[in-house]
Image (cartoon, rainbow, N blue to C red; front, side, top):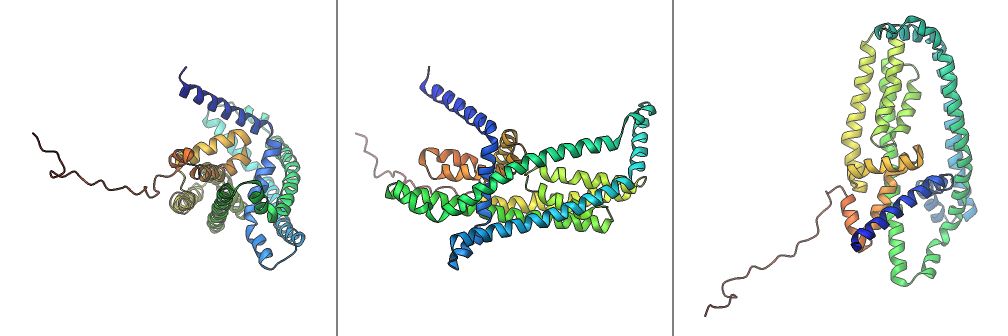
Length: 357
């Protein structure tokens, strides 16, 4: 067997084995990776504490205080939106049944089928599923906080440990890679957060102007789903449009206006601003972004989809720093990077050619 084919098969089997291990041990790997990304998010707070020469335990306390403050605000907002959703669902329940009956008539389904459809049971089933997901995430959330605390305590000694563990040139290369990864991921997360905030704010403002129920909740949902590349913006458009159809039926003007408004916001920000800004930050090919989304979404589900782009960026940065892996980094790039300088070749003149005897 050809040696190259053998090496390729071994590499393929190794990749499949790694993906299997990551999937089976997702309960440990997801909190670990999420904690590392949270560490990058809180880098400005950490740097501020170091500049002011705060004790390490106080720096850790400051990070957790900011984090739990956001959590409390988020929980309070979610509770208020659940109350509003329950009110809206109760208000439009009869209209939902009437619309379902009309759809069954159009589809030529026997009207008696509506008696077997209970939206309360369907909603209860979905709420039970959501509660199970929340319970599963809460256990990972505690482990994530534990990892984050130890990473914060370990951070001041990491560079010193690298210097002691590796030789001079290797230590410098490792520290450069870590600094590059941390810098690019921090900028990417900050940029994507600002873009998502702008998208969610515009969606909330448009829905508020059009008078759609739960406009603030749909705006926050748009903000959160915008972190999932490509498909997140599509999913975020569906619930408010369905709400508008339910709220303004039998009219169709307002639902169309909602669809057009949200579509225009997503197209403008998602297809014009985001690729330009995020592309400049990471330099990843759109195909690589989509493949990374599919791969990590398959391995880790929703957390994998959220982390897919930063993970692809880390792989690209690591490959750029090793000559043997640099072709992989080039293929992962967007193709808009500056090409390497070409050494000019001096043409051979007739004076340099040997004379014919």
